[in-house]
Length: 412
Image (cartoon, rainbow, N blue to C red; front, side, top):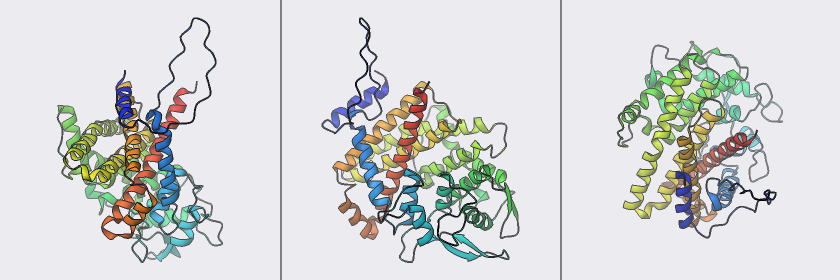
């Protein structure tokens, strides 16, 4: 039995009694004397359907709350541009109508649209600069069409232009030194690269009076990712391990997943135009894969030492694995990564583990509406609420990408 099958069997024993998917149509009878092929076992096996339903329900209920722009944006990322808030409005309309602001930038004409960091009561809107812009570009909104049907609604190009105007280039610098807030640039740069591929200019003037080029900032971002993971690459080559002390990539939001995804999104359009770009992205993908047993092992050790922290630790696993499946899935989908058999087994095992831990969190009541409302209402636990909802969205996104990859692979 391959490794994925072993893990599925072990977790199946732990989660026996879980609901399974609806029965598949019966296959045609095999010819006399032949042995029918075994049915393929999807990651998660018998509890896959239940886990997916849990995530879908959390996204619809919690990410659909119209007062939480950050959550709405995650819902759009997970379920697409048609995702709706619980009040029936399209989430994109809610984001534009209820949260978009404008400001004057330097000597440039007119008011430039933007999303603020948070609302007046502290509810997050865009705690990461251009998170909503990136989401709009990624789900395929057209640059030249109004974002909503409301009269006077800005186009996506206007929102993009405002983002680019606010950027202050630092051309001589390399890596993290190129950015005032290194952990806050991935969403912007991904939007700039993907918008350029959709027809936006590849260079622009900024409000500070300088000029910027998408290829230049994409190179600085790639150099930053390489520098922040260098200690991991050294350990990987030496057959060693690393300690997790918030150093390098460990200090980045979601373990640097968004930085990796931004590098991948830019590389799809050959940003930067480097002859070694594909191999440089492959090296970063290999490091990401290498991290999986390290990260999951840390969660297991913490669980042994502090079982009362199970809700937090299970969600930490969902966070890392959901972002991982999403990140390497995008790299594979976009032709920048072709997994080996061993790597495919590792990815499938990660999916199985994520689905199992989703059910464990359900059994602990983590996803219940009452528990989540309680955590949101209390300042000390509000971040955990946001983590649970956001990580459910990224997990769903990663699972859907992996599903599409399997369907593509099975199509002649």
